[in-house]
Image 1 (spheres, rainbow, N blue to C red):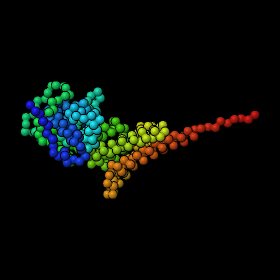
Image 2: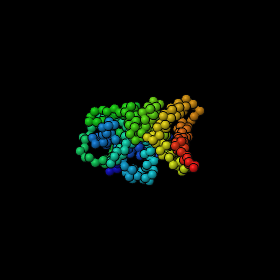
Image 3: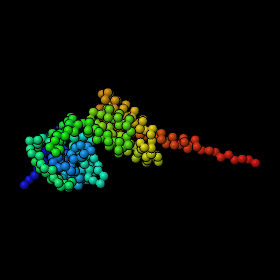
Image 4: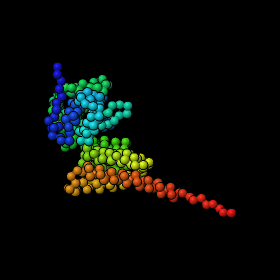
Length: 286
């Protein structure tokens, strides 16, 4: 017997996605219908169901290379279709903020006692509802409706920035203040990560041996305070200046310069300290 997954026609209207990304999301969305019926796929901290879909599985289903699947997941994350949560000693969890279970008329399936992370996901599903402006997601948990608000999704991103990126409260608060939703917040953070990494690699090749220390929030306390001001100004500029068409590129270009200057200033401070502490030995003449 042939099995099918449903493909939402609205995915075709998102010009940011290619066919591999659209199909991958359709697979993830279809598997979520199985996850919401099983207790072991509910994350208590995030208060939401998730999907386990390994890179190897997606390689097989899409018929593409590993690098292509990795890039597909990155693109779906950047576009706000999925939120990835890495688990220590476990498979990556995929949360779908736009998932909607419209099978409320059907009888909820019993929770399985099987603890396996693999699910039988190729099944007939109801029509999906993927819209960029969804504020809340309804899911079924123990026959009760659980609502995941935009605030919850943003809090999930904030927790990641605190734990993994070492962002200080001032920087996080600034990004949250000027972000309309979790996707926007994530995109601002991604711009910071990517430009910082690119500057680091370039300046190390240019001979700045302390570039890594200069671009670590933990070792360069000057940087984060300045970054708060820079990001606030850049976001305001891109929103008020209608002549700026590619806002992400504009912010990225300014951040490249910011991180380059940060490394150079850090080296200047080190060099000045070295000169200041240098003592000329005094030779006594007989």
